[in-house]
Image 1 (cartoon, helix red, strand yellow):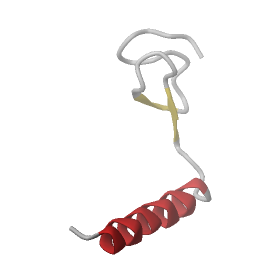
Image 2 (tube, rainbow, N blue to C red; image 1 turned 30 degrees about the vertical axis):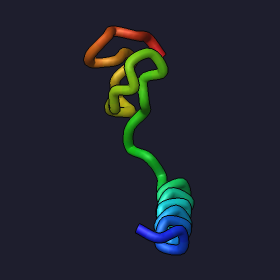
Image 3 (cartoon, rainbow, N blue to C red; image 1 turned 45 degrees about the vertical axis):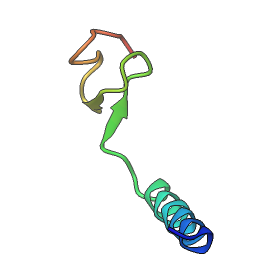
Length: 51
């Protein structure tokens, strides 16, 4: 893999992550174990962390 293809791939990844930030989330991420949880849940389904 050349240096140019690596930079192009990094740029594509940063564009995709910027697009994902504009979409509303229907989940929250537990700060303790990084599990995706429903917005309706008050605690993490894996570790029990209260939000």
